[in-house]
Figure (cartoon, rainbow, N blue to C red):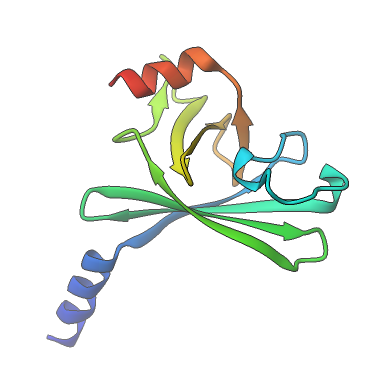
Length: 128
């Protein structure tokens, strides 16, 4: 009984699906453009996807390279599932936060993501 209650609770609040770190080769997401960034090399971004009753969201957190949390953003994933090419990778997610949409790209099965400027992929997601 106790396990059933815990399972129902997790189902209702949502579960962490996966966690990723922004590649050092990628630009920072526009969600952090209000912060004065002196050098991209001094920051890292971690992102966690969540699934809750069919809703998909993401927490995106900006840290200094030393690990100090600077800002946390809650985003809504706009596509029902990852957009894939005819292969399994790359995969794309469109995430909206604070009125800004960013296209997230996963190039292979690893805990790394990129911010993509591929407008055709973003348009494909937004048209669905």
